[in-house]
Image (cartoon, rainbow, N blue to C red; front, side, top):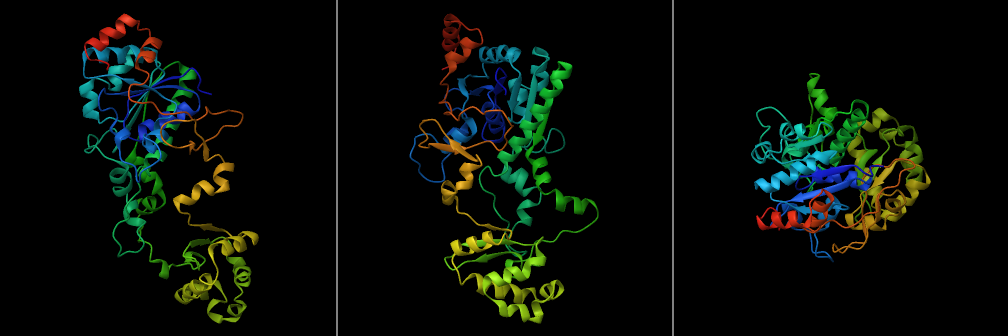
Length: 399
């Protein structure tokens, strides 16, 4: 779908590069620019545990199907190369802090005069303006902690704030940036003009927390969820099974089927208990109702409960462990996981970008580039001959 679209990825870590990964999935020609020597610090980030390959698994996810260009933007010669590339590019993406962009001369106002069709994708931690605009941040600080999410998802009001997982907010934020870029490309088809588009971790965190945040904006108050044992709705709660797995019962919209649920548990005696006879009674006695269901779920193992609830078309989820996901047939059938061409990450599968378009094939998932792997190739594609490339190498603009 995006074949022939030239994208310059001048970003680091996760959210910016992940947006251009989606573009690469749809066929765009993405050039990943890194500084010679160290490169993007993300490629050297430690994995959660040792893997089979020599390349960090996260690097494959967020930089697959790109060409790697090592270029020193601090040197006049390196910056001149970037400017020449920008003249031919469709999209430029960066999430470098605003003071760094100014120092490197890669702000929108620096690049836009070179190419009036350029779409400049800007990603920041806290937004384009305001007292904290220049502050660096990660999804854990700007998206998760700052927006109330860290406080609201803790298990109970007395619990410590809930820590986020690495890059948990970066990937959805990358999808927002991709959407902004594609919206600008659509407008460019009508006007012939590019423009700057932007999103931020902060804004995406607010979007995640929009239901509760809007309550506060409307003059209401938000309370932290009670502990599981005191949940307001026993039929929308977590229950542990005999083999120490967890089922997420989610019958909030199937309250009329609570008797069906009781019948499949084999606890028919509960149907005659006045404490559970009506919705109001179950709400009043929710503590006893939850305690009862705790004992019910402990009588059977996870697989049995999963089959019973599925066969009776009751809404539930099961709390998977990450190690379970590769054996989940729905992950494969839905396309959430897809094959990965041989590389040095040790993986044969990878996570697909989370959007599909009917009749459009994505590019097969290929390897992420080594630092500067395609430097000479990219420069030749942009019109540099062997003599010019050696000259750049001689002044240290490229390795």
